[in-house]
Every structure is written in C-alpha cells, then in structure tokens.
Amino acid sequence: MRNESVAILDIRSNEVAFLLGSKGVNETFVFRGTHTEQYEGFSVADGFFDEESFRRAVSVSVTSVRQNYEGAIDEVYIGVPSAFVSILTKGHTNSYPSKRKISPQDIETLYESGLNELLAQGQCIRRSAMYFTLGDNRKYFTANDLYGVPTTMLKGALCYYFVKDEFYEKIAALATDLGFSKIYFIPSTVAQAEYLFSQKKREGYAFLLDIGFLTTSISVIYGNGIVHEETFDCGVGEILAAIATQFNVEYDIAEEILKTANISGGTVDKRLMWTNEQEDVSFPIQTINDIIKYVLDGLCENVERFFGKYYHDKVTTGLTVNPIGITGEGIAFVKGATEHVSRRLNRLTEIVFPDLPYYDKPTFSSRISLLSAALSEREKHNWLYKIFNYFGGKRKW
Image 1 (cartoon, helix red, strand yellow):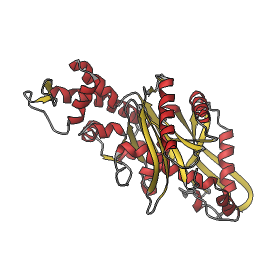
Image 2 (cartoon, rainbow, N blue to C red; image 1 turned 60 degrees about the horizontal axis):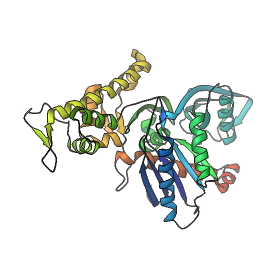
Image 3 (spheres, rainbow, N blue to C red; image 1 turned 135 degrees about the horizontal axis):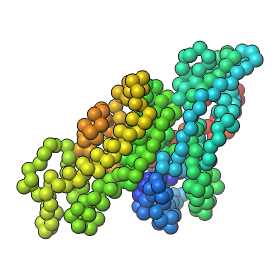
Image 4 (cartoon, rainbow, N blue to C red; image 1 turned 90 degrees about the vertical axis):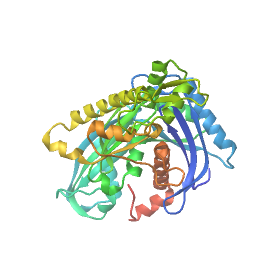
C-alpha cells in the first residue's frame, strides 16, 4: 500500500465500510477507494446475529476497493464498536528518587505500570489519559506539555480500552484470511471523541450519543479519555420494526414511511394521512409519529438511567450541563429526532459530524474519525518519527 494511505474497516451495527484514504490539505482527506456493505448486524447481548453474513460483507467491501486500487493493501485499522469494548479507568502515580525531565519513555512506563495493576479480561487495544499532573495539582491534557519538565512525581488519570477476546480473535482471523499482515484495533467511540470534539471542549467534559441502526452508545469524554460509556440495543432499526409491525407492511414500505416522517412539530391533525407514491397505501401521520417517539423515549430512558447512575448527586450534576453531541446514522434517518431527544432529556443537544464536503453528515462520523485516528497512529509507528522523538522531538499522544 502506498505509504501515504491507510485502510480502515468501520464496523457498524448493520453495515461495514472499507475505506482507503490519506491526508489532504487544510485538515481534509483524500479518498482512494471506499465500499459499504450491509449485513445482519449485532446486538449488545448476542453479538453478531449471522457471522457468515458479516464475513461476506467484509470480504465484498475489501475486494471491491482492492480491485480498483493499484498497489498492495497489506495493513488495516479496524474500528471496534462500543458493544465489544470495555473501559477501565485508573489513577496511577510513578515516583522518582530525584528530579528528572519527563520523556516519552516515562509516559510509556506510567501506562505500562498502571496496566499491570489492572485485573481485566480481553485484549487491551488502546490507552489514553484524561489528564496528567506532576504533583502540583495542575492538569496537563497532552503529554507534549510535560516533556522536558523536571519533577519527582508523574501522575495520570488513565483509561484502558479492552476488546472482548471472541471479537478480537474472530476479526483478526478474518483480516488475516483477507491478506492483511498488520492489523490494528481502534475503539470507534474514542476516535469519534477525539475527532468530533475540539481539545478545549473535551477539557470541560463532553458527551457523545452515537445512535446507530441497532445499537446506541452514550459516552462521557474528559481530556483525551472516556470516563464512562454504555451501549444498549436501540436504534433506527427498532423504529422500522415497530412501523412494520403496527401497519403490517414490508420493510421497504416501513423505510419509505420513516424517510418522509418528521416529528419536529407538535400534535398532528388525525385526518392527515401518509400515502406512498403509488397511492395504494396510507396511514395516519399522527400514529406514525407516535411510534417513532415511543422508541426514542425508550432510548432516552436508557440515557437517563446512565446519567442517574454516574451523576446523581449535586457535586456531579453540574458536570452534565454541557450539550450532548449526537451523531450516527440513526439521528440522520429521523427528521426531528434531535429536538425530541433534547425535550425528553431536558438537555441541550447538538448534532456533531465531520467538517468535510460531502461527508458532513452524522452517517460518516465513525469512518472519518477512524481515518483521522489511523493516520495519527501510522505517524507514530513511522520509524523516522521514532528516531525524531529519540532525539527529543515533540510527540503527539
């Protein structure tokens, strides 16, 4: 594969996207190939519904891009959905017998010694820090700010991201079968947190609600780490299923109904009817809106339970005043969903998405965030980059 390009496999709850891209100018990207394929999906409780369907979707996506690309694609960055990720946080301190200037190796040692004290199941695929301190209670949100500073103590509020063994082994085996010699895993919500929210926003707590087709995740972000995260089975697929069941129609009719629905207004006249293009099927718009709102209310109840679990007292309640950033294909599918969620949760909300032409939609948040994260990771792996840091250069973390 050309040195400037990276390959991304973005796994969502009902589709996979294989993407080949590189850095462009002014924080943009150059895309050299992309293909999206649907499959049976997964749930939090049961995992993949049909593994063969998933394998086929990945194979078709990868093959399609390879056929139209001149060059080898032998390494891939795989986005791990939050349903297969667990997060452990840890405050950890390393002390030194005398003052020393902090180096990249000291940061690495802090992460490693913190990880060694954790008793966790699964593969640790990433580490990050909410912040660092040097014993003076000042918070440093990036490791770059620490390098060269003399201290006798290095502290970190650290986050470790573990992927379930079964997922790790199956995806690694599939990638190997498809001819990838190097495989890297990136938690999807971590990539989105870093790309969709500015550093300044993350330093004051940020909230991400990723509404997918079959699953939804809610994440609390602080600094460069995720403090809390939960995933539950709810998404636009549940709305489609409810519409199909209520009106006893096929999936394609339910999809057509949902694409034209809008729940941003108030009560709708009961006489108003939705009619398909052939004008042979019609249903009350008010009933359609009620179905959509009912499913979204269930989603909001999960979010409310999440905040009640972690932010129920007066001290932590103040942390939840910041708006919830909403993204994912689910929110783009339902007109008025953001407003309804905001009213239901009694919280400010905002739609977050990539700031890119054509890709400026919540549907693309996951894959573009993964591309950004992979390009950053690849830079760290570059041998020239390592030599540069060995001789004291600044390092992104």
